Every structure is written in structure tokens, then in C-alpha cells.
Image (cartoon, rainbow over all chains, first blue to last red; front, side):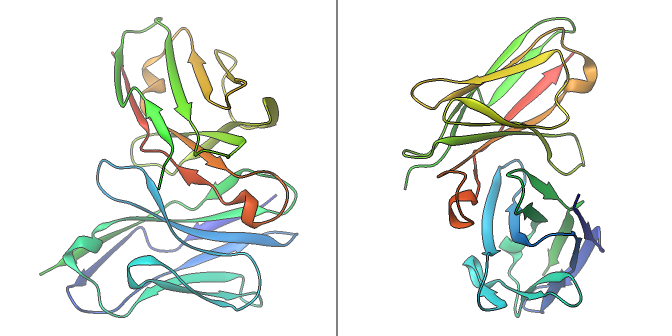
Length: 113
Length: 116
């Protein structure tokens, strides 16, 4: 069984400041990791994913994430946020043995001017 | 690029009524997943289909059933609706079951169901 924990439920941040959203996973098997973004009243959009290879993954909208196997983490970062980044961000894991995504509880990012 | 299509986008039903949600996957995607997202919660996996066969099952109530058709679209049928069924229902599709790239799931915009 696997689980995903997002350590911060809300992250307020000023415009043009950096942001880091923390995600830890637990799994007895190798996992594939994803970050999705959900804008208000919209569906889930894939930001980036880690499947294998380089541990630093770059995604859309200037986001990147680093897979750290020893710390079982997959933290999401953006060096400078915009007002339009206000959204809920979900970390998710896909176990090698199954095909269903397990989501973290979500982190709500509120970008202030 | 074509995305996952879900219909209807909004649905209002009364308790004990039935509802049918439809999902049209991205072209050439043969795997479909259904998730339920309650208010303020993360999405929970309900059920998935690969090549028209059920491939995995999550926390789907017995009152719900789903299937995938020959054109790969899927329908989620919900009967005896309860107030607690009010949620956002997502469909996602992926290219297939084999390999990590093929398992990346792309989500539709969701159907917001309100049960009164």
C-alpha cells in the first residue's frame, strides 16, 4: 500500500516570491510521482511527473520538482509566483503494481499582490 | 490537443434518483479511470477500465456501476442517490497499462453533482 502526505494544507505567498510545496510518499515498491494543479472550479491539470531518470523534473508554468528517494520526497518549487498560480496543488503517486492514483490532501496556494 | 470530455458538467438530482455520467477519453487512450472528489477533499479512486474490462476497483459504492464501451467511452451509473454523493466526479484517461509513460493519467474537467 502507498500513501502520500502533503505537509502544508495552505501556503500564502507574495507575488514574485518563491514557493515550495512539500510532498512525502510511502511505498514498499517503486512509485511514479505526479503533481497536478486544480484552479478554482476546474479539473486537474498535470504539472509534471517523475517516472525515472533525472531526479529534477521540469514542468509547465515554470514549476519544477525534485525526487529524493532517500527522503521519500517529491517537493514542488517555483522561483517566482504569479497571481495566476493561486490554486490547489495535489501530489499523487502511482504504484508500479497498480494503476490507480493515490493523492495527497492538497495544498492551497494563495498568491498575494 | 484533444482532452478528456465529460458530460454533463453540472447535474442536480434529488435523493433516491439515478444519474449517469459520461466520459470520452483522449483519442487512442484505452484506459479510463473514475475519481470522486468531495468538498474540500482530495480525489478518491472509484474504478478503472482497460480495453472494456474492469481493471481495478476502489471505494465505489454498490449503488454505483460503470462500464466502458466499444468506442472506449465510459459511463458511471449512480442509483439511489444520497446527499453524501454530492461531489465532483472526474474521469481520467491514459494510453494503456504497460509502462510508466502509458500510465500517465489526464483528467477531464469533471461533473459536479449536487444531490438535494
